[in-house]
Length: 571
Image (cartoon, rainbow, N blue to C red; front, side):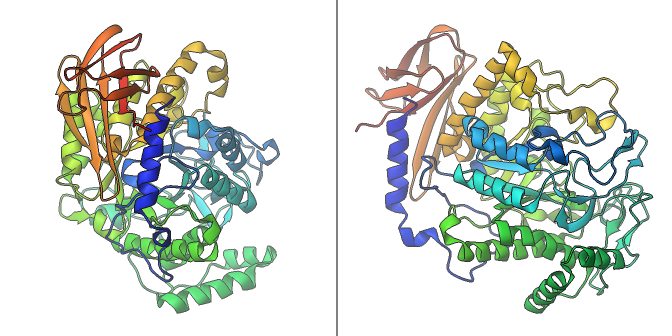
């Protein structure tokens, strides 16, 4: 039954309260840079309201997720031997589309997919002390105006975005503005008026974090300069050989004429990045290495991305999912939600929420997850309704470059799901969290151990992995159905057994759920007094059973240690 009557009630409530005329932004309107999305959306064939503040975001490495097109596995002579897990392995855009169409993300309750950059990477390899590496991860840009053939084609990217939107899933593109790829024998440095190549950052101050190279041999774009620069000769020659020189130059002329920006390095790249929004309807950006660039650059990036998004909506009104503005989440490395809106460099504090970001990635949950559920849930509910009111965070437990993830040995797969998907805020599933993909690969160095290929074969052949995935799916679908879990207010109803409620209220929607964790198997009594009244029929989405509230309690008899309760609405 899956609470169909309840979901239909939410759909009816949303649709009758939001007139059709409000489904589109007025022509020319660009969302204010400092304002977050606080509205709901509902794709016509999707029964679940969507908010970025409560979203479940699936993060994957494009090259490591699924190989949908083997003929693009080798390009640019990338055949040199690399360190373990330091070369391309075949994952591509077509592989992501394949899994979208199969319903994999839908069954997991995912509302948005964030994939690593797919722009053209440096062609060569480089040794950073970890063995030779290619740009398989997507963060070593060579040409922002083209896709890397190892990842796929522009048409394949367009197909992926459309396939996701058809499922009511948003697309978040990973973007890099503040650095190019390393210099190699086949990849010369960008001109010296575009990039600095020293000093290397020591992170001791604001200046020594922003006006420096992130690591050795990673040229840093002058995001803090307004001095006009010429396009690199190599890029002009490339465009000419590809038959698009005139088009690219004309577009740049139109961009700079419209915006009035000087032809400084960051503005070229902002134009190139927002082209993907303008032509494809990308819903949001995840911005890499935020604290390593002048923060004003992010406000400029958001302004142009928002403009491009609204322009795309006007050009393709039949493809528009909703009237939500463009979304931007930032990676401010080591930012923790407890710090509220500001990041402290030691000698200066910056509020990145004032520079285009609706959300920041929260590096704190992976440590908090060692604590008991109530302490964590109460903490994040409080932060999001006080210090971070009207702002958002993206929680995670494992990621692609965090060498100290929660549960690196994958011994607590069920607890990980509970902690990540039930903690207030948006949630980032890192590919393979839901299938216990190995994070400790023998012979790997550094973050490579976090980036093995998705364990599809294990999932297909091991019952234990299938059971873990089923648990993540049940929680993910319940979270997707209820904004209260990510965006609502938390309240404990009972200490033992542990039972809590979440309530979300807006002008058009009221959503409320009760969840029990670490419950006894078999018969159990859950207190819902003062939350669901006597006589209310509750549906447990985990066990697919119903029970009626009597004397402030609901009795369940299930083999599970968890209950996900929603009210069944009368017809």
